[in-house]
Length: 200
Image (cartoon, rainbow, N blue to C red; front, side, top):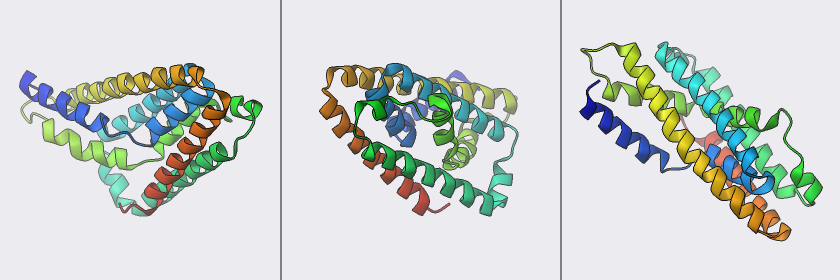
């Protein structure tokens, strides 16, 4: 991959990251409610999910995922249900004790589940990477470089959200944190509904 092609890919990655999705909503919500550490664990979980998806793309299994459309739909619906459940829990939370309880499985697992619950990311990488591959060079190495770059850009962006929201959460009163928690819960439910009703 030439430097010019890599620069174009990097710019494309930055543009894609500017549009926040369900994982950013989750990171913001948990950073406000539980602190920066929780948000950063979500970021780490998201990175695990991204690494798995990039690995699948690198192995050429995107076409297999597209062929097994019914599994794609079930995974999408399961992910949507999980996001809606998380959002409903956040809206219903009242006391500080309830808000401070970490999720089952931990924040890292939660981040990975939310990242993996959107198989559109897999299809996106499958369609996005070939646009920047130089056919004259090693495809596997180029996918590895692009994958690591995408993960790095996402990690920096998501960590920024975690630190900013963690600071905001410390500065806010308990009443405002609960209000933001309900708003974030509403966004998670919205993201889940969007995921459930979006077409492949």
